[in-house]
Length: 79
Image (cartoon, rainbow, N blue to C red; front, side):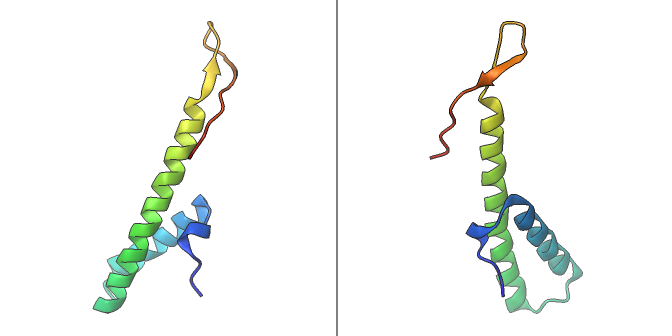
């Protein structure tokens, strides 16, 4: 059974996306299956991008002191 994309963590989604890319590049999937794989791959790509954007924002929220060293973090609201 195929796991719902929204329930995947980044690593699982990335592995699933890599599998889809491999299947599509092989050229062995019939047209209908290729279309379904492409659609799922697009959803996985969007999820991975969202997770990366969230991680980037969290990293950027690190507060630096006058000497450039991290002094703490600011609250990050992903919503």
